[in-house]
Image (cartoon, rainbow, N blue to C red; front, top):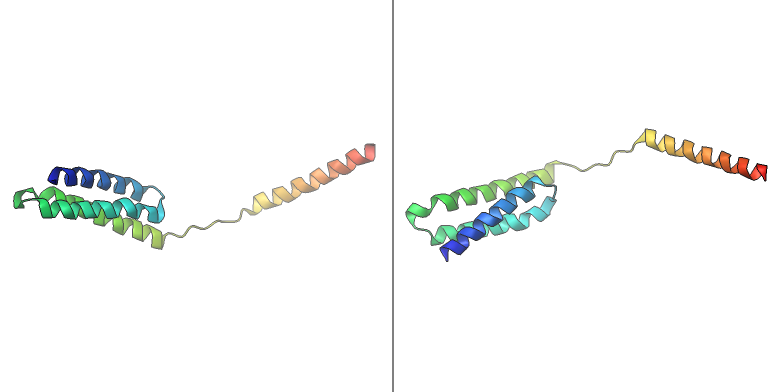
Length: 107
């Protein structure tokens, strides 16, 4: 049973690290929560001399959780308006209207 918890804790900790770096926002909490859960289960099933790896995995899960929470709360996603693009779009519309008027005038 300990080996199963060890494998699951390692897999979910790696997934937690990957998801916390990628822009997944709160979706990253799913593997983080599972990594913490399996690390705690592994910690309870381990003997005193075997508790080093579960503690490292647990610490990594908590660190990922803090990182994702900080990234979610502190970084604001803002969409800036591109004035140059808007002006260019208006100019293109005016040019297209002029071309259509010229085409209509030729017929």
